[in-house]
Image (cartoon, rainbow, N blue to C red):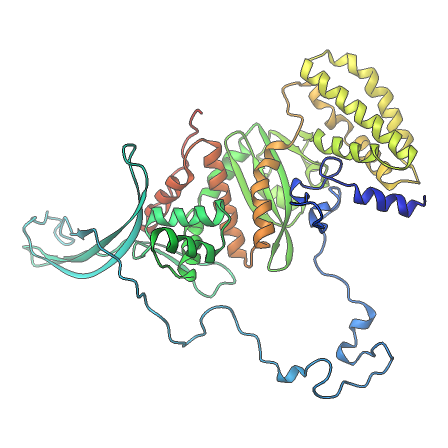
Length: 502
């Protein structure tokens, strides 16, 4: 069997158990082919450029010769249509100046809230309760109401908010109006997001929409369908999208709190997975600690890690074999990655490759048991000394690139890999970060990433809040509802809830 045939056979037998493929690469049903994902990129490679070089035939455009060598353009009506007759592609959304459509559904009102001024804005005197109130403006909001323990359930409730003016004895007229928050402008977006109480979607309903879109991984149209079918509420896709964006941007200051907690932690897990932003190859990063999870979208570079952790981080950093993490001195390596690579080599059709993979797998599994038993480190010193010499023999092994790559990876991080033998309390795997990414990897397969930098920012903020709250055993939806309610009033973002014992 030739070398090419062996490599092809091993490629077909590759699974998440014996390689770095993610669990999501498993076929849902037998017989369905699985295309290779970008997550198969080598862990030791730097960030790859998404641009591909054009071939020699791309330089000529439409005038390049066809299969017959004839460069004569096709006759009208045959072959490729004339580009001059094609309509120019427009931007997504309603064209400027086009006729809009108002709301046709009548919202039933269960209660009316009158917002009266309590004190005079001029003399600061208390306004009497029997003073005449003249309503000037108002709006209707729909919010989701949770039932109590005796009557659990969900219901929608419409509330009318009235604002107006009251005359004081001093002659001044004090007016009230809906609360307004920050004006959030994102680079590359024409319109800014204004935080205001003048919204039809209430705080808890907004959090519920985020739960459907991010936690249940529903598209905007599916969220619209769910609200119509189960609540009889008609919201446009644009309103749903604006609602998700508003919640994400309102909670954006929470990222600073999460980053501060991350830098002060004693142990952090980091991992990354491919993420596309309008076709651009980026990466979704996750930083996980005992009580904090931080997500962000960016390039796969060393500077990206340094911008998040900076020199303030003095704890242990658990990661895979990516070179970008070698800047940190207190670094740990995930043994699960090494075991999967060793398993892949141990089932190779090449005898020497199989022998090396089996030996690496044997040593790693033995050391796992040593760490679990809390054995004396000197007992494993002789085994590691012999194993190091064994890896040196394969440092320049020409026949197999995989064998040489794993041997070099073990030797380059030798002291880092075996740190848990000297300090049994340190973790052996990077499972915390990988578990945190799993949900969002599935979301990426469904949505194919984000389309704008604003969408990537909203995704990172909402994913961070959701996973952090769940890690702390608190409801992320109650917290997000509180965030949007306070930020619409112009107040600062509430602090994250403290961890609750399970």
